[in-house]
Length: 219
Image (tube, rainbow, N blue to C red; front, side, top):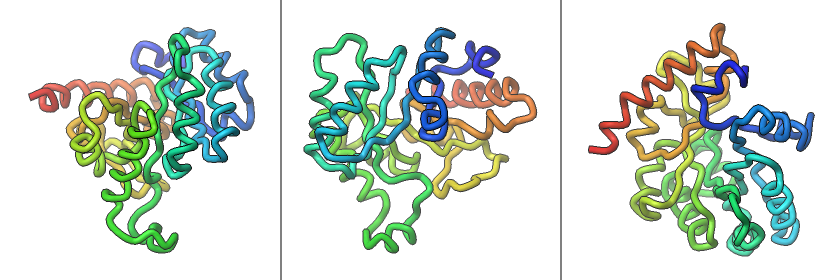
């Protein structure tokens, strides 16, 4: 699938499932094919542990994006940022705000009252202050994060689904065009492509929708 989609896809996500099964070998094999890697391991631990994990991840080939939970706090995120400071071709560090599987009811259950957007914006602001390059949020929160954190702050939007695709376990989804209009710099698309009968056709359709939305975003 990677070889078949290489001319359509910017980078390939290696998440917890694949990394647990195959470890760094998965990243190395993708790199050997000449593609970029989005290493989505969402680190969340004490600052020293996260700093060492981020440094190790940054040493893997072709890792362009790396995630950690903004909820880990300023000290943890700052330690991660310092761990890659000065490295050539270092990955961009992105703070995960509110998982797209969580909605308002889930936040209430966790004793985190208030609108999802306000919590996501607060975490994104914290990530920027700690020296991270950007944040991960749903398309719903992206415009507010953009206003607060500025044009140079990267926004990655997961949970992207074409209009006719199932939401699966995601709560706050968006179509590719909606994500672009919301200000996303990166879109994460998984099952709508990997589970499609024709993954290349599905990827091309999504790419076409992204391309058609770009002029609207620039205007």
